Image (cartoon, rainbow, N blue to C red; front, side):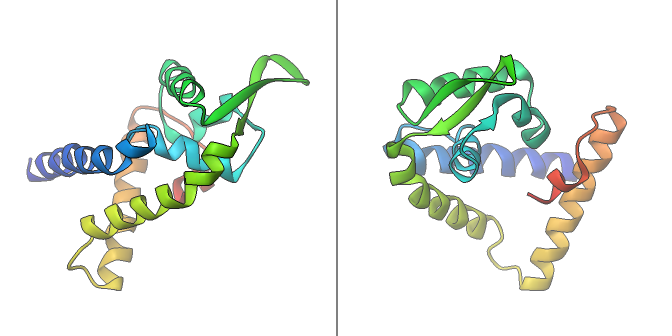
Length: 149
């Protein structure tokens, strides 16, 4: 059970570290990936977040609501389907997204410290395969290319 232990340790402490780094921007470790994706894809459908981030719809609604309250994003009804929302970054989001990306890159660098490029590639591949294994067992189907983000 060594793998489970160290996955848990890495997950818990990278989130604590990232939360501290992102605090000045008013966001946390569970919100940054949503904000980056919305900045990269203005007008993205809120429903598409489920396939990208493997989270329950209620968590998406909560996260989107928090980002909207922080003034980072706005929502607009989807003209093709009034039950869904389009998400847009605000000027505030655009003004901080590159700093947030840098913080994420530094956090990833910290996690991979001491690994050479080949080891990093192998680790990433193995971690993705492990993620695919558990989602397949739980019958969670996602688009294949979403595993590469």
